[in-house]
Every structure is written in C-alpha cells, then in structure tokens.
Length: 219
Picture 1 (cartoon, rainbow, N blue to C red):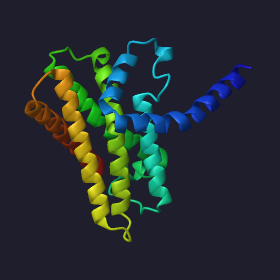
Picture 2: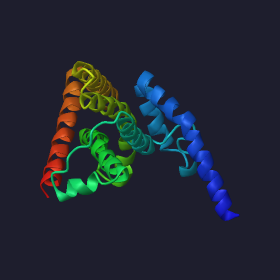
Picture 3: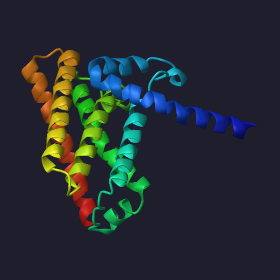
Picture 4: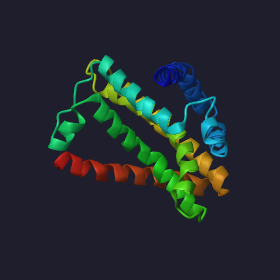
C-alpha cells in the first residue's frame, strides 16, 4: 500500500506539471517582478505548502533544461564532438548533459543572489542565500529557453542564423532589463547603479562558466 501510494503521488505530481509548468513560465514572462516576489513570500510558508500553485524554481529550471535537450533531439541537432574524457562522459547520456547544463544555468541565479546579499550587507549562508537564489531561478528559466532554442537554430544548417541571433539577443535583453528592475526595487538604488549591478553579475556568471568549461574541455 505504501508503494502504491508513493506511485500515486508520483503520477499526480508528474501530471500536474503539465498544468503548472506553462502557467509558471507565463507568469514569469508576463509578470516577472510579481513572480519573483511570490517566490520570496513562499519561502515563509511551511515546507510542504511551498509553491502549491506553481513549480518550485530549481525544479522549473531543471525541467526546462531537460525540455531544451529534448527539443534539440527532436530537431536532430548534431552532437557536439567530445574533446576530452570529461566531455565524453557528459555527452554519453542525456541525463549527464542535462545535469551539467542545469548546473551551468544555475550560475546565473547563484551569482545574482550572492551579489544581492553582498549589496545588502547580509551574512552569506544557506539560509540567507536560498530566497534570492530561488527567485533568480525563476528569472533564469526564460533565459534557458531562449538560449536553448537559439542554439538549436544555430546548429541547424537550413535555418537562418539571424533568427537564432535575434532570439538570443531579445532574450538576453529581457533578462538584463528585468534583472535591473529587480535590483532597483530590492536594493532601493538608482537605475544606473541597478543596471551596472545586473550587468556585472551577468559578466561574472559568464566568466565563472568559462572557468568551469576550460578544465572540462582539457581533462
């Protein structure tokens, strides 16, 4: 009976994603600041009642990465050639690649959350890092979708690269503008300061990703 109930909960949870995944993404795209504030408020609820009407931010980001991998497979995007033993392990299975991409995209919310704590002079700990990190995972999800689709277009020879480039530029612009608005409202700073903070956080996250990719490509 315990096994059957566990399976019942799993089936219900998996099927509910069909409703709450697009609903959560729509909320992020149309009302980003409201959705980020919703994530902060959910952190105050009991653990078993958090994100009852949405997908939790890290789960949403992970599901998005898996979906983007599936989209690349359906579009028959050519596989990247492994240049080292580590990359061969990463490309050996979709699960390994999805997990790595989820960690890579998590650098965006991690750096932004750490920047927010530093600017507010809040002690860095798991407890203080969780709320801004979860909120920023919501913001990183549309960015993951746009980059995944743009990359798939770039790697399809019959598709114009200008479409992929325009899609990625539009997604990056939306991300920076929304990030700037978030820093402006949460830090109470001027627009130039908020824009610089958002841009610098994105640059640092990109630099950390490059530093992560270098040893992976060589070892």
